[in-house]
Image (cartoon, rainbow, N blue to C red; front, side, top):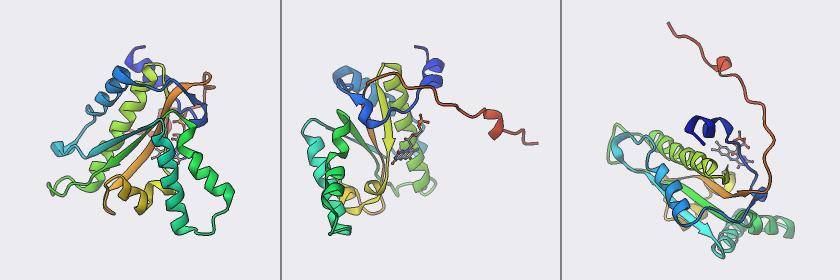
Length: 188
Ligand SMILES: Cc1cc2nc3c(=O)[nH]c(=O)nc-3n(C[C@H](O)[C@H](O)[C@H](O)COP(=O)(O)O)c2cc1C
């Protein structure tokens, strides 16, 4: 698949439709290498990626439950089971983080978040080009201090998202995309 074909055909695949096999070994290394090609102002390399697979997904689910019980101690069984099972929906979850650097005053936090987000998009496109599917999710877990701390992040750092990977169970139906002209104008 050529690059434009990949960019023009990628679509998100809901986590529960992502099955084994997930990218692994060289395929995963290649996907992660594309993250290092993201634009990165000041070469700060603010991104951190945590690979969560196999039994570690249960540990991540338990962390989600712990975080929920901190802010909602009376959460019911259904809510607990939902958080526990969240990472188990796909065979691989990559927790994409921005470790904010204050080293360069001309590279504010927002630019470091943008660099990480661009890295995530590279990975999602690379996965698609190799026949895998992916989904980027955030939600309250991405902003939770207890969860951030478990990934070595301070309050100031950010979880950019939980990126679910796997093999799509079926081809996704084509979703209408807007025409770029709706968002583009000639500035004179
Ligand atoms: C930063 C970010 C966070 C997102 N978080 C969620 C989320 O928590 N839950 C969700 O259902 N979709 C979330 N989405 C949207 C999906 O990742 C996806 O983009 C959307 O379903 C549209 O699919 P598409 O990528 O095929 O256009 C998020 C998107 C972005 C850019």
